[in-house]
Length: 276
Ligand code: PAF
Image (cartoon, rainbow, N blue to C red; front, side):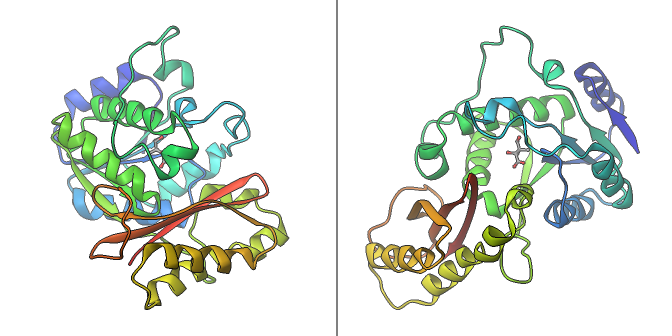
């Protein structure tokens, strides 16, 4: 497994090695969800292709005062996961390698980013688009894999790829869950035992909503809110029903309506979604 840490090395490698390269962009703290993305990348790249995992905790996508400094960075364990999964190349730059001092150029998507996580985390998707665009330039993949748990991120990356003509296929990976339904996330490790015990209420509420007969979005949202409120440690950030393609609110449930929620347990913010 090759490990590269500088942008010059990444450019050089991408120029020299012509093959089907498939990228899995991550912030590290790799778990079974990431492993499923890596396996999809391998299936797409084939035996002669190259699976690249980027590991970079991107300061641009963290709001001031959020968990950037305490975000887990288990470098040795991440290396082990990548080796075990047969990853060909890991790109693991430092923050000052990715961002020159005085940087003033950003990539901003201006429609899909406005609501949901974009509403609660101003600047977050500008940070995501900027770093993903840089990774696409540096590593020149033919395809890249993103998880459906971050549904809004996936939609925004697809839009950016279309709007900016990146010749890159975006592959969506289904959400991987704990046996009790909690979506895997690197942030789950922040939860204390009481919070962890209550966190599966998110998935339970989404599943109940998906089975409900109601057609009015407001009624479904009310149902979700009441269900989540039965967990005393849960605090809802948002619960919204939007179109899965435009991420704009829907008054009624229609084909490809997406119910998306963000819920705080203490300082930890968890997201999940379901297509209705
Ligand atoms: O989903 C993530 O882990 C991050 O947002 C990404 C896509 C690696 C960009 O930093």
